[in-house]
Amino acid sequence: METESEEAMKKIRVGILCGGRSAEHQVSLQSARNIVDAIDRNRYEVVLIGIDRAGQWRLGDTAEFLLNAHDPKLIALNRLSETVALAPGADSDQVTTRTSNRPAGNIDVIFPVLHGPFGEDGTVQGLLKLANLPFVGSGVLGSAVAMDKDVMKRLLRDAGIATPRFLTFTSSGRDRIDFEAVRDRLGIPCFIKPANLGSSVGITKAHDAGEFEAGVREAFRYDRKILVEEYVRGREIECAVLGNDHPEASGLGEVRSNHAFYSYEAKYIDEHGAELVIPAALPPELTEKIRATAVKAHQVVACEGMSRVDFFLKEDGEVLVNELNTIPGFTRISMFPKLWEAAGISYGDLVDRLIQLALERFDEEKSLET
Image (cartoon, rainbow, N blue to C red):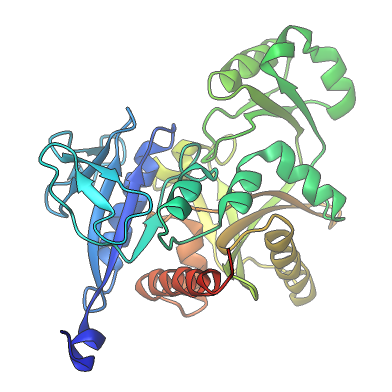
């Protein structure tokens, strides 16, 4: 039996869940690598769990789990890693290897860094709740709502939070998408994007009918529902939010893209693809207005733990919420950790705060009657 001192010294086992089946697979691996490098090994023991593109869950160690770990274009899961399964409802050994049926041990909390569908959209969050495992970030509802840009924007609009004008189309009605009707409603240029994806994957900017049709085809490659959104001329401002019931906002950062827009390449591949200006050069009263709006949007969309709220600041001073990300990028050039670092919270401390928020929520939920 463990003594009190031994129990106090016991490390928390954190399962870093990364990879996934979405188009943001490689971004997730980059984020996971940075979290593993930064986490406090005196407090936490890391268990790496990667989901490959086929949906297989794999157990790995920090030394051999990722191939080409320092190349964002070639980073990949080691396919030789042992496959594992999650055992919902188990009191111990929730993760078990499939080939030898060897238990991988008990996990105290999961840190999902799965960007996009099958990870950020409530699917994994539901599985983790069934497995009775605490996890970092939003629950099922907040994750699902924030991932679906159509639903998210309607909720923001109904809450009185301004967002760019948009039209929604589904694959069943794609033959009826009329460029001229869209142009009359939203103007040109416009953006075409999958409704349920992130990291600017599948997004195109259209200036004419040809680019519009190509953009629609591209967006439908990734989702059965797409958005066409007005082009907003202005500055791109981002704010990081941290917390459960009483969230707080970071300072603001500005994205100055050197690409046609803040694309996947600019975010994760090209170190010179965008300039992140922290803090954003804005008047104090406008800064506070945007920070307050970020917290309100976080709550309206039912986010928990963390979110990154992306804004457009128009030339006339109007502030629009573009979208919320419930598992924002954690790469070394990502805005979310950089904003908190500017606020005095290091990358390692940020990881610690997020894990503690997950454990606090789990403890509160355990006290509820079922």
